[in-house]
Length: 339
Image (cartoon, rainbow, N blue to C red):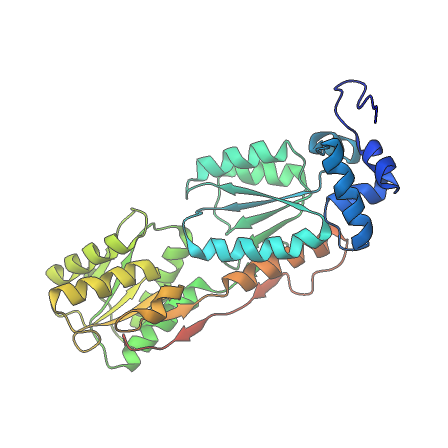
């Protein structure tokens, strides 16, 4: 078959794909974007034609033609945290049937890096953004406001009254951890945290409030470091805590990996858990239910957050009202052997 392709680039065009597959250009476009309403047999024909021709969609041209792209930007602070992997999987599951491309930006808990990502992605004219939390630079806030694209905030609640948010109360999660340890008869309660992003600090304040309500306060039992959270760091911080306060009898960790490291370090040092010190983690990562002893943790709805946030964004794109602008999905305390 002889073809000329695009007049300017010589590349195969969407029109050629449509002609070869015997469908309209609109149907061909929807099929290649994975829109679920296209009949499977038509979608197969279009994909076969595109493969035969070597066709690759020009997203930039499509965005220029429609004044917006078929892309949704998701900005997260870490790709090494299982929390965000589960959230991303859920977002993809919602967006793909609508033919929307998900562009992922990882800003490594750095607001300046997030600002650069926002600036760069806005140049692609995305149709919407899913953002982690509310804490970002003034320049980022200004760019998002000027772009007027729909945004949904994930993992926490708050912001302006008009903001769409899907998450849970980080503060109440920390408070619940304190109350659980107190109910277990513990009175010298410590908090161990790393990374120290805004959500970690909200948990910290909730934990402190739980202690204050019980007439207790122990700022000397807080060990907060800015390093990235890890199992190795959890073990090291646990040893530091025991050296600092040998009478500590309950610990809340800002992330499960820290708590997992502490359990392993306790085993190495011969510290009985929970008899000597009880431990509570956060996020309920898969390995936590298999530690020895099994780790008590606060289970967060990470997949449900991604799914609900994506659905809220789609509703906004479709011009539909969002029933619950601040969607609180709650959390669950998973009580196991470590307490």
